[in-house]
Length: 407
Image (cartoon, rainbow, N blue to C red; front, side, top):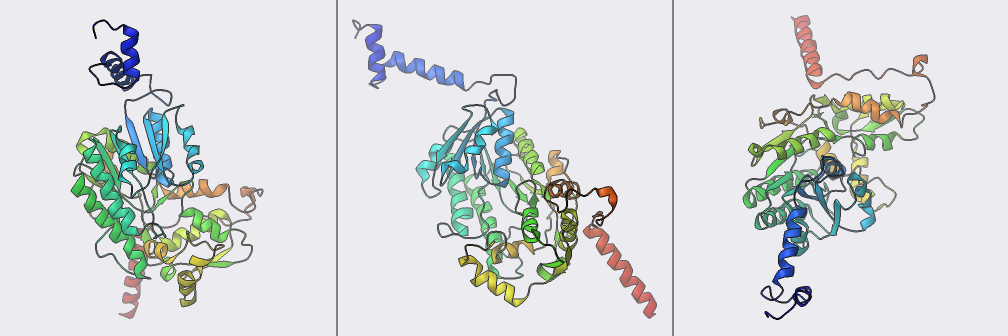
């Protein structure tokens, strides 16, 4: 071996002979890879922060916003995806060339999941589906899948794991319309327990109903009222007068994730991510259509015919809006959101956005008769809907006044 030239040793290294023979080549390659992991640049999308992130569910509402924020920070991003690669290629624009890598995977294939996170120090699991599909049940995704990702993160030495649960996750959730809606909350609850068992240091977020550009909350009511020229009604459980929501802006949720990852004391904590105010759904729906300038007559309760249609007709009708309105989704939307006293986004220093300002901005581009000047006063002013606390206070005053009149 002493008589071999340097070129021969390099050739043997390229042929992947044992390390004792091709040692010169292997050592040089390892040093080069270590240098590639160092932070470089002044910060921003064209720099490298030294952080390698894997985001499961990157093509979703929150996942796409997380990808953009990590790319803005200069992180190396790995995006596992299922199906066609063209559905995630728009995420390339979130970062500089080569900073985002796409990797096909399957949730039931542990080798593909391990390959997606073996070089990462941070993993975010935002996989979500609120109704079962032909390939995955709710337990397959939210319990078994979450446990598998958490276990493999622990085995591969991942430093930070962020898991998304739900504000109303519970082993015995409230049942309103059908038992289908409660299965989602049960799966989220047991999935959170599974993650805690496999990765106790995981950061868990329990978000409330979220909104923003490309959401399924405000967009749903836009599609329902699209093209309506005469007065119409929207259906909601008990007219929306018994359900309160605390809508959370999607960018505020991303701010909370970034703040939690930057603070080592947040590891192992559970945060409830809710909006700054609580509103009755009746008031929010009426406010949405006033912003869109749609002739809404009111919000009414579901009848038996509409519920039977959503259960037996819409799932098999390719032209229906089943993904926006089905028994699974209705059972989740009609439940009143409540906090339990856990830390919130305020504890992470996040300044939350009010839905009233964002709704006016989001609906401005889709409102009817956009060419009319607002100063002409041809349309009713949307105003600000009352908060749930204001509505309850008003009802209490009316009840006290009614009692005094009886006396």
